[in-house]
Image (tube, rainbow, N blue to C red):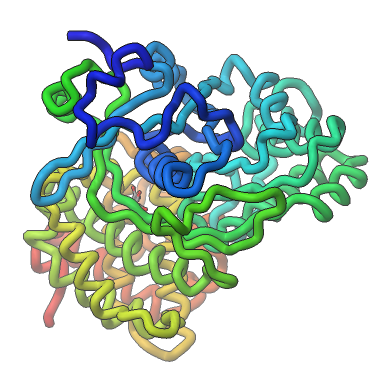
Length: 479
Ligand code: CS2
């Protein structure tokens, strides 16, 4: 079968073809982190925005971690299929990714691309750990790779690439710029702007650049949402049937997508509002709601689910939907500052339906990854806020305990802090001991929780139940 590329795309059934002409779409955005999430989210919004309102907003996609994405997409001229799986599956070929770079071997090209006056926005989806920050404080860790980047040479870290790109922009007098962080971090724009400041501190002597950034670069906060499981061979086989071509770059997702963006762009932007994005002056309420209700519940389902032997989030829902409902309603909802006119009960109901989508096959181990980087914004904020209100957030404590058990028993713990976490609990087996030692990992928990006897007792109690009885329904305790 022929391969999807610019020479074959016109053979794709009409409703499935790109909605913009990829042959005549100049690049206006550099995107760091060309994973499946970007391709199923911002790239789709951008295509719809350009189709509706025009603009030179093609994307130069930069793969951070592996050359594999580039090897898949380069022979296809950047084209790929998005399969949206709901009651039926819908295929769509996306044409907005116009250039491809691999930062591992093309760091200098990435920096140069950001210095092009035609490029007005840099977007990022590099996952939580990609920022190399301390998740409890949101400050740059200053690890070896970051320090090497700050000392000069082709940047290997994301924050290094970003700062060197902005520096090249300043030198080239390429004009103002917007940096749009699209990862699930608390106050993601603000956090990234602080990390840039931390990097400038490490560089030393960067005051002119700091002043130039303060003057001409904005870092709007955003809330991004679309569930995007890892692509499987079955997805690629199905896409082949639907588009009539071979496509190595398929991504699979759900029909739902949402994007809330702080409207603070320094050099224009695509008309993403025409594609369904919501522009607002304050993203925080949406972002906290999404991180705590969606991602917090997702993590709970992932840890309880993987411990109980469930392969997918939808399978885990069969068992743990009740616990998730309790987490959302009893623990999270009282902490939220719900945006005016927003129906938070309907949102929770919709989340339960999305999690239960049997067609997605989103693996529990995928969501369980990198817990140390996810817990603070997903669950620990809820725990802290409820404790400050004098409440006993037992469902959030259960989710944290499930993570702790996973740290103990995961056959291969996929987490950048894995060695640190495993060393912390070496030789410990009693739940109270395991919990105390993990709660003492300040990079994740900060100091408050371990000094709060009620929070500790809730976590220990849940961990004891999971350890003794397994993560079956008994883990949920008495109703
Ligand atoms: C998930 C998220 O893998 C994870 O940790 O919770 O990727 C989630 O699917 C997205 O944030 C949904 O918008």
